[in-house]
Length: 244
Image 1 (tube, helix red, strand yellow):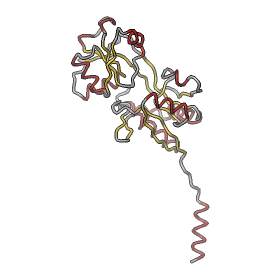
Image 2 (cartoon, rainbow, N blue to C red):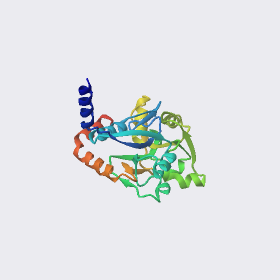
Image 3 (cartoon, helix red, strand yellow):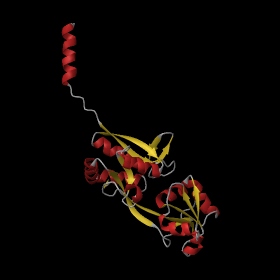
Image 4 (cartoon, rainbow, N blue to C red):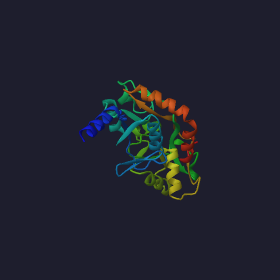
């Protein structure tokens, strides 16, 4: 019997244990941000989660998702509480990141942030936009000077469906939003395609969403490699969530 225990001990010592390296990924705590993401009941889901999990599985990492309000998320990022941040962009919150050397991945998806209006109001002059709706925590950068000057009043909602209802009902002249997210919730709410639309004649922002880090450049290099080598799988995932 002693010989058996000795044999088992030898086997347990000689078998290598490959523990997965764990990284904390800082993510947005928006409850409604599909098709990108949603955070509800401590569960993070959507395109972002599936993409990052796909990468983590490929490279044998374990990702722990920490959802926080936007400004707090950026502070925790530069403080080192979170190891990686997704999504991120060099254009976002530069005031908080200015003293940190942030490393960004190659672009993952393109985005447009702009004003959604009812079809009848498409193409109207900027000075007719007096009340601008947005989701709490979302900054309408192209309109900040007019908001500060008092020529545009900002109206905040906690959810995208509430914001879109304000646009449809005329409680706001337009809703500043991520266009893909706004369209997703308009479709979910059953509104006819084109009845509420992105007004590209008004100021808007275009950019790309990326993975970022301050302390783990190796992970960013591997993520770029993953995007290139798994292009077919990533494209299929994008198509499933409605991204081109």
